[in-house]
Image 1: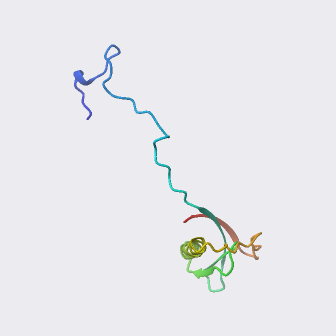
Image 2: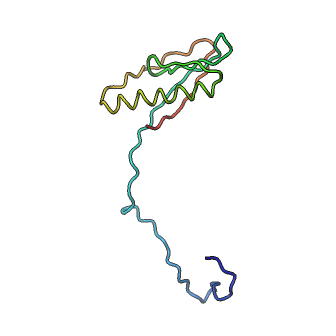
Image 3: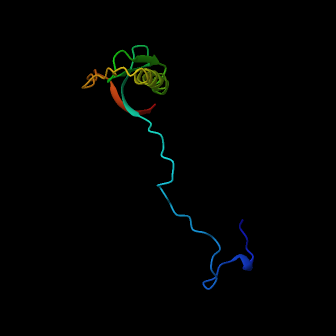
Length: 115
């Protein structure tokens, strides 16, 4: 509660009744470990004027859309779904190392993906 009453104001010779809150990390619950994966996406304009997006560090993940935003909104969930499934199944993730090289006209996007 906020008050402008003089009785509620602290003065140098008046001790505060407020307790200080100390950080005690020993008793704080630890956040769950959320894995983060790098999704490397190459984007380019396709022949029809739309946008093509392909994941450079996983095989066979690509899409086309009207614009880059829509393409990324398609490709990131597909990446997340595949990686989540492989992780859940304890199947090795088939990373392409090093990632496939960009083709002419492709621009790179680095997207951190939390599972």
